[in-house]
Length: 244
Image 1 (cartoon, rainbow, N blue to C red):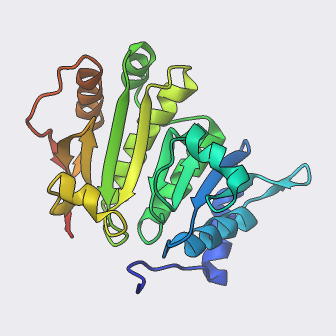
Image 2 (image 1 turned 120 degrees about the vertical axis):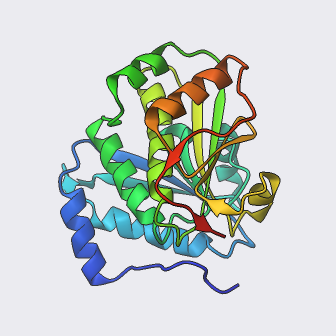
C-alpha cells in the first residue's frame, strides 16, 4: 500500500523538534500498539522513536518514554485488553484515554507535539469554566475525531478533544476517551458517520461537529452526552474543512 502521508524524519525536523521538546517539564509515557498486516505500523514506531530521541535527557533518561506492544507477542496482549485497543497502529497516552488510531503523521504531527507538551506541563489549556464542568460530570463519553494527514484544520479539533479527556483524567474523573481516527486507515469509521469533510467529531456514536468546534459548545455537547440528552443537530464550528 502506497503511503498516503508525509513522514518527515529529517535532521532539520529533528532539530526543530528538539528545540520544542527541550522545555518539557515532566516525563511523558506513550504506548504504541502494533501488529501484523499493518501498513503503517513500522512507520508509526519509527516516528515515535524519532520523537523519543528528540526529547531531552533528564536524570539519565529521555523525557519521552516509548513503550511498544506487538499483538504477535502473546505477553503483550494483556495491555491491548487493558487499554481496549482493537486496531493497529494505535498511539496511546494516559492509559488510553487519549489516543490516535492510525499513524499521527502529516498535519497531525502538530497535535502530537502539543499533546506531549501539555501533558508534560500538566496543563490542558482549557478555560476555567470548562475545567469546572469536567470535574463534576458523570457518565462515559467516547469522542471520535476523524482526520486525514493532509488536513491543516484537524490538529486543532484533535487537540481540543484530547485536552477534554486529559483534563477530566487529571482531575480524577476519567470519563472521557478521546480518539483521533485516521480516515484512510479506518474507512469504515468514516463511512459509519458519512464523513465527507474533516475534521468531523462524533460523541458516543453520533456525528455532532464538522469543523473545529468552539470550546464552550464542545463542553456543552459532552455534558449533554453524559446526561443522555445529546441532540441530532450539529454544533457551531469555525475555520474551514478539508474534503476526503
